[in-house]
Image (cartoon, rainbow, N blue to C red; front, side, top):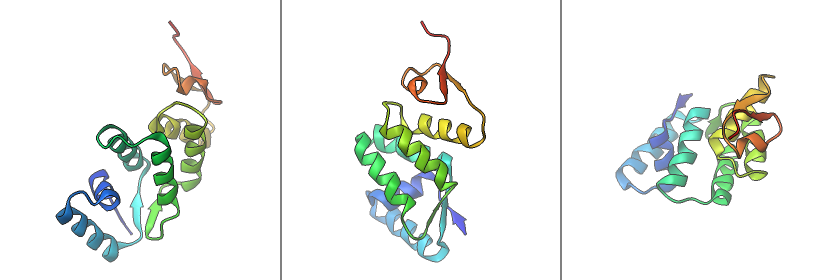
Length: 130
């Protein structure tokens, strides 16, 4: 098993640079399953939302698709599914939802946050309110 960084995953998903997408597909074919860490997943969601203007529903569908894609091995998929549940039930961004889901899986809650949206989720506690 090999791993992909954020840029490789984005090229696989969007194919917006033909040469890089071809190289990424070739690497995937030769090294599947391709490991995708939580960090890469969080960065990918951020890149897609900020640079490519993906909407929340599009991000949710994309992460679900990655979880179900043969040849892609997502780090701790049950944690990612919990993060998706948080994401769908809130206005918190995906990375924050993944942080919360990871803390919950480690039985390390409450998760302290200054983030208003994350602080509304069960298991998170907003501190330092203004």
